[in-house]
Length: 525
Ligand SMILES: Nc1ncnc2c1ncn2[C@@H]1O[C@H](COP(=O)(O)OP(=O)(O)OP(=O)(O)O)[C@@H](O)[C@H]1O
Ligand SMILES: O=P(O)(O)OC[C@H]1O[C@H](OP(=O)(O)OP(=O)(O)O)[C@H](O)[C@@H]1O
Ligand SMILES: O=C(O)c1cccnc1
Ligand SMILES: [Mg+2]
Picture 1 (cartoon, protein in one colour):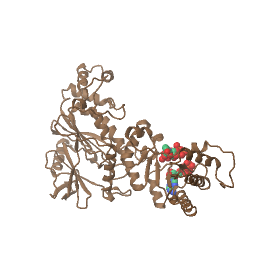
Picture 2 (cartoon, helix red, strand yellow):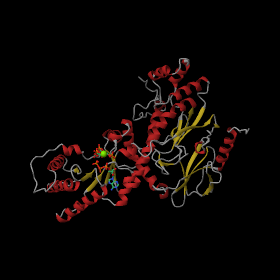
Picture 3 (cartoon, protein in one colour):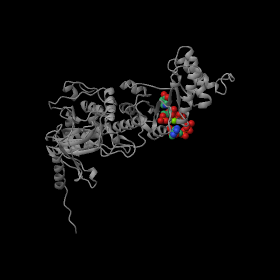
């Protein structure tokens, strides 16, 4: 059992719940983090002050934007980061027998009370190279955090971005339901997908556990099994024409169970010859009893065509039976939907009001991982750089500040990183923004608004005020607003314009000075 008052959050006089998934513990890390921690300790380096940046190098899904998500879970991990005796004894068994006992005593003491975390607010639209998190603290402790924070940010941001992309194609007016639980990558993949698709702009989930954990609105219809479980032997043909009588019995039963929420899955037998007429019959009967049917769900076939045909019938009924509003009966569509099919449906024209999306959304079928990395940028106040043959993989050294500069149209123009002690960009003052690696790419900007991106979410021992973790709905609203404020060409699907990410002139010069300093000069033979 963990002793009371042990966690960094309690020491700091505030208790914060742990991560949603109890599997997220200090052991949810790669073995090499512990072996490095041992080697830092053995070298007497473990308390050296290190600064790491967490960032990604390329936007996912062929796009030019990413939605940052996963911060709340990172802070909950950090607030509760404390190894138990059982965990320490497991590490002891897992490391070579030559490891000294003193290290395990050290592990007993560590927590994140001396770690500082600066981060971009969850739900913000973010771009390559800009740190999403800057984690500063004793090098051995921060090293142990690398893998779990990457794990918590990578999928969260990927799936939130995927959801945001689906929202952008579907348009604001459509209802988007996340139906992915059965196809997601295990329980954590499913719960994470439900949470982060909501942040990315989905309206609701079918995942009951996610509804309970996060308060996400729950929605659902019914399945084919419910319809095909009814077997009705009596023939009503003549009254109901060719419709399937078992389906009619199923619809009637569902309507009796949920008279105010009657929504029927109409494609079990034949959408136009059976499902839609059966739905209309039950909906009209409900109306006579004073209830309004909600609508239908289509789960196969040509969703553009079938939604259009169903809408025509609803309009005809509105007119011919004098049922005001029946033409607006809701049409939900599902079945292997993704960005492409939504786009195709838009181009063809359709009458769908609500999309239920599962597999492609929650598994991030179009791109398996985001690829965030966690790189050392400073140790003991000395800037560090990681070089690579591939320029896109060269890290940007120094403890940095990051700003978003807005232009006169209200859109953001550029993100700029500066050294920590440089003056911050000022509204109305011209500043040179340089591409970090391409000498000729540079631009002057006179910002109309300047927003500092990295905020203090975990102050450690500093006297900085800690940003409160916002409620899920506030993160979602923030994300939706952010996307509305993006220049449209950055977020369009086809050939989007890359957003500019830059460094100050001073930081540019320093990066290239350090690069030359660290790169050995070759000798040609
Ligand atoms: N109008 C449309 N334009 C483009 N794609 C569509 C359109 N209507 C449906 N789709 C997509 O076409 C695919 C149809 O898949 P598939 O042929 O496996 O299903 P189906 O035969 O309609 O249904 P099932 O096999 O479940 O009875 C789905 O991915 C669906 O989202
Ligand atoms: O297609 P997705 O985007 O993953 O959305 C969820 C799917 O799950 C349900 O049925 P299921 O796939 O279990 O059976 P079905 O394919 O036979 O309808 C639902 O009817 C959707 O088709
Ligand atoms: O409620 C639904 O219609 C639903 C839920 C999960 C998966 N497919 C459909
Ligand atoms: Mg299916």
